[in-house]
Image 1 (cartoon, rainbow, N blue to C red):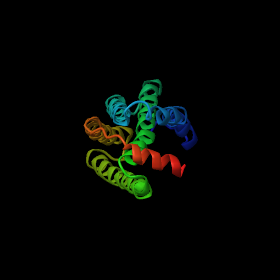
Image 2 (image 1 turned 180 degrees about the horizontal axis):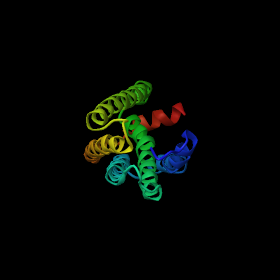
Image 3 (image 1 turned 90 degrees about the horizontal axis):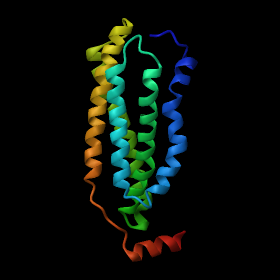
Length: 178
């Protein structure tokens, strides 16, 4: 409601979407050296904190500069989640089950996104609307804070993922397949 064009608004969100382009490859490589659950937990913690941060500072007249840091943190958090999560899933199954595990991981991720959008849109509609900048912020802020809390709970769950190493035989079979 600050009068930006779609292009102007999209350009202002670039810090959120550019961060994964640079961080995700590094996170994927790190997930072979650092337990993936730690990277995922940190990523979800950053994502949850940034969503809550945006929910706490957003107003109809918020200065863009107040949103840059949470946008960057959210992007870094996403990066630390997606690549290591795939590594966690694939390392938990035998090589012959990797296709099924990858498909299930993708399907569950998409389903989570659909339910997240549906639930948070319902929260937005319950607390706000499109009548004015203030009603929009009212609904968006509650939805962002709830989203941040849910993602934060996901971070706690990620840190509790039990560690499991592939057996020597599984690692050897994987090397042969490559």
